[in-house]
Image (cartoon, rainbow, N blue to C red; front, side, top):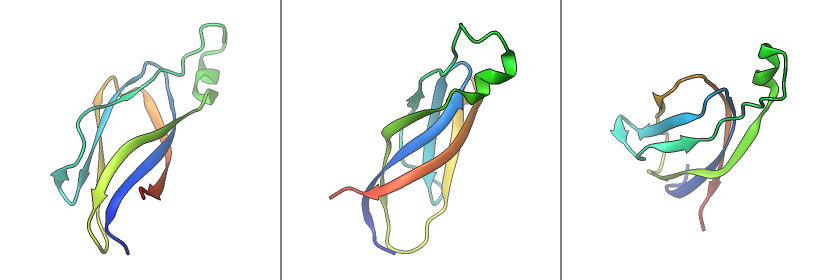
Length: 92
């Protein structure tokens, strides 16, 4: 409902790391954002790698217009990741 600058924490898991970016209403809104790998070499069972979650605090910083917006996430590199939630907060 309120336009302005927002930041978002991302909850994710990623076997290799990589980069993502965001569009707002069809227009590029961020450059590449780095996703760190959550791979743990001491984990002997492959499927358990997807249970190593990480929170990237304030990874995303967007200026949103008043009203509804469509956010599009682009996975730019690697792509071996699960993006769970984005927790948006208005940047005061």
